[in-house]
Image 1 (tube, rainbow, N blue to C red):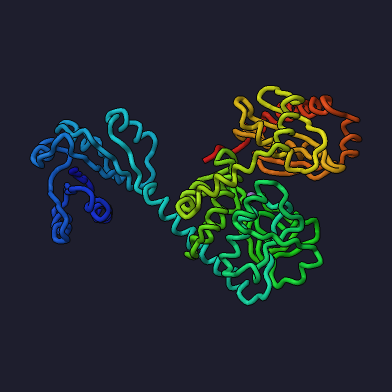
Image 2: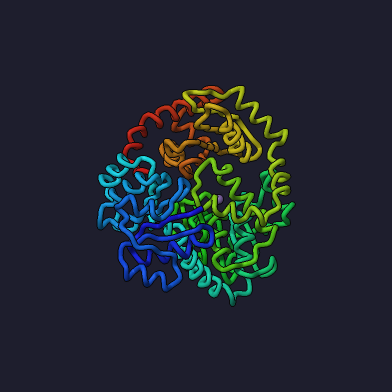
Length: 476
Ligand SMILES: [Mn+2]
């Protein structure tokens, strides 16, 4: 395919020549003779002519398949140039903006006269690659700093949150990799071990061993890192960490020597993928599989709280991972026990304007509640799920939503922050409330009355918070 570049700036011409010449037949039309001579001497295919005249193009022997790349550096109108190309029979015209930002008025005027011409912005073309490269080198500096800081430690603890999920497990593996340590020199630990069946299965299949840790054992370690969690989570038991890597909103109340907290990321594994890439660490199939599964599960396969970086990390990890193994791990999600709670929720649950709420009574393990919340979010027409159940002497409330219209974290804080712990993301949140405190505040409710109360809370919250939406900044 032949491309004719109609450009005035030497840097633009040389850059386009470098970028396009291997793939296309490329020649340039310039107005200045000295410039043409210089470029010609450098081996470029250049002609001199007036780009505002039709016969310039006719003489150049263009055909209907010739593509025109017209530089608009903002100094002089290119309207006549576009007109001449069109009158000479040119149909494939691209405008490449290289000057100061195009004003919408100029751009609209051109669009009206030349609706088929496509626009490109040179800075927009360069931006993605340049930004990625620069942020990678900044990440590299940060990673090298903490690698050095951890290098001379005998024993390292990589601490996960209670009942670690795939993201926590994968992040533990990834960080151990980054610190170039083995399972004897860097312990992946948690105060409360893995309980959810699919997470146990992941840990077994990928041979990830989570050591039980007590607060008393913290001092046995020379360095402590927390991943997928911040030290405040441990309620004053851990006031200081050497390294914190997390994607939950940043919390006050602890000291960290190094931290990388990115609350707009869908998973901690995404952050760690960037760390691994920045220092060119070899990523084993096991680590890649764990991280890929983590990104998939933390973002509900990109259905919630996710960004471009998650997608980019997923794309990078995919060829390195064992996809068949991931399918096997996912198969473990459905168990007869869990179906029992799904059935309870479907029998006692209530649907109000795309909000599904259910109280599922007592459960032996906490994971039945978020599992049920995730399950009902798959239903067509369901935008929010709020599932409550009693584990021990606490009421656990799990909130999920799609579409991000209102904040799930705000919902649990609105109703439960004063009587228990409540927090989370925009799309997923949880509250843990002692049941007696719940009853003091909301009354002695059971069964269907409980479901109805939660439905009322949702309705009131969604009404109250409706105006908040207008104040939010427009997403990029
Ligand atoms: Mn996570």
